[in-house]
Image (tube, rainbow, N blue to C red; front, side, top):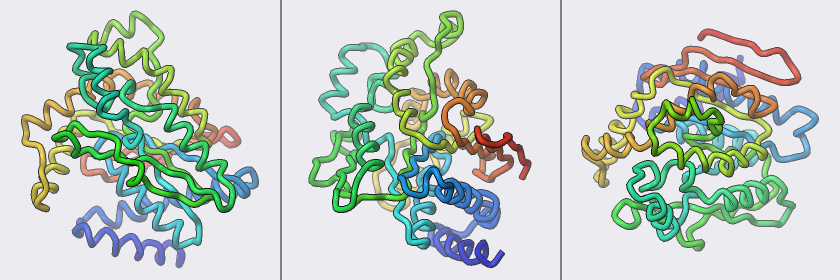
Length: 310
């Protein structure tokens, strides 16, 4: 109990810097800390004690990926452990490569801009995560960074001089992304139920899913209504504008998020049903529209799956 209180105070101070909300105690003690202790528990197992634990985090845009990964880094640092976060966003193709994809799929809104599978450099992501996992003492790994503001918001991979330099070995690697865990639709009849633009994205899922071979464990943030992403994105843009930064207006937000909706609607149901097949250890947290935790499920191939209402 004392340990929970101490770590809870650390998170409370961090959350208060973002602005106190009524949900803070719930998020701290029923969400962030349980996730931390779950990952820490995996790391303490004999099979991971002397190796880097690679954990995937799948969460819709605006669902709190950045917040939870920042807190995990903070908490593991307080334990004297090195936790490195890599975002699938940082492995987007360069602007020139993305334009080539758009030209090859003229008229396809899902591949016109960055975002959907087919717009990432998967070999680079695999190479980087593998180097982080296998790095020895004294070895540095460059982790790419992506500049979303480049080319008037179209984005481009940052110059290597701006990439993060990580000294290995590291204890934990977290790979996060909005579409992590999505798998190819194999049934033609099922594919026909979705917009035709999704076919090209679906073809890219074979390469994208190669990332899953890297994962020892997977965390899934589950939502019941994908339309929440519109409001979550609007909240983020309003926050950017309030801080004096450039943000999208309502029309731009709707256009941007709508390019992701076909993938959410096509692949999320399967992820929520078949998550147990994606990694040896899986933790699913369901959140509501206010990002409060409402239910949890753990699947461990060495144990029996458990469910909990919060």
